[in-house]
Length: 70
Image (cartoon, rainbow, N blue to C red; front, side):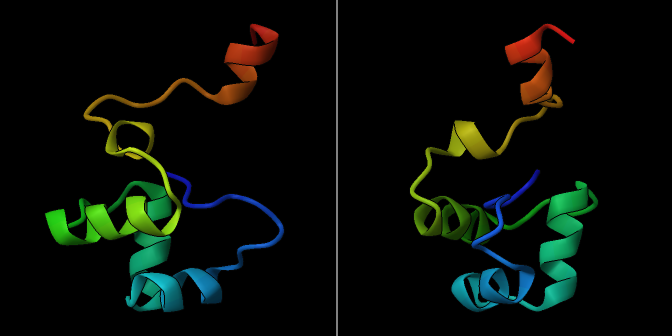
């Protein structure tokens, strides 16, 4: 899961917004950590996204593959 992937939201901002430590953000982004329900809802609220747009039991198809067919 990539959280707020973009030049305007750096990891330190994500840690403050989500009220977690940097290791947690890194683990979430690598897919090495399954968040608590509370943290999952915080992620969705902070980035104004529905749960199904952020979390899935199966890997998401890369956006480049969906757009460019690669």
